[in-house]
Image (cartoon, rainbow, N blue to C red; front, top):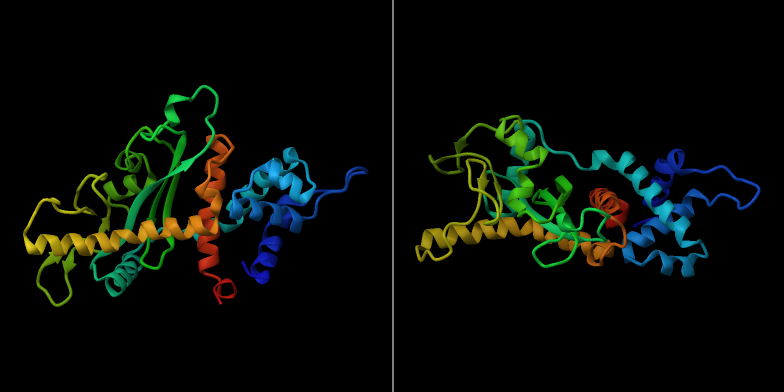
Length: 283
């Protein structure tokens, strides 16, 4: 993160996290609060490790991180925006066709485990099939590695496809309220095709959800189709990889309960888009 972006974030969150001085101790400045939070997100260090590093108690660090994350979510919420008009979806599709040679694609979708501590009275709800506690980050991304939509916090006992059925995106898609373009012919072809989200076998096939053909097929056309779809769908896996390499908190078990893990994860996705849109951080 560039110094310019760091200063911008300070300016944005200051009204929400600034504390008044008391006789003892004096309030921790906003810049230090933000630095502690970013250190936590970027390294995944425990609150105890940050205690040794900063000299701030782990109890106070826990409070600071949650306060700053909530503030960042408020000020950066516009960084993740789901297209809502045919023109916006057409632009997303044009990027996918140009970069990944898959036409009429309005995004790549997948889910990711985010490991965390289990909250009381919900032991079985958050155990995934691998045997550890987690919440789900379900994401739709564009061709340029940006999040278009995220849903965070669903119980991990159900599949990614099951998670999707509980999201606002699924509701909008099924009720025809996403503002998708009309079915149109593919470029240099008379074949009419709808706009689709590319996904893997965990999701149910329908008019606007496309997944691979039978993997056992030896037909050349189906194999080529699967290759193209897989390449377009891999973008969402790459986004998870980029996000995790920048914010290593996603690579380690979060020592917080699911509700707080969801706040941290949402903060990370918003910061990811914020940094990708920043010229100073990308230069």
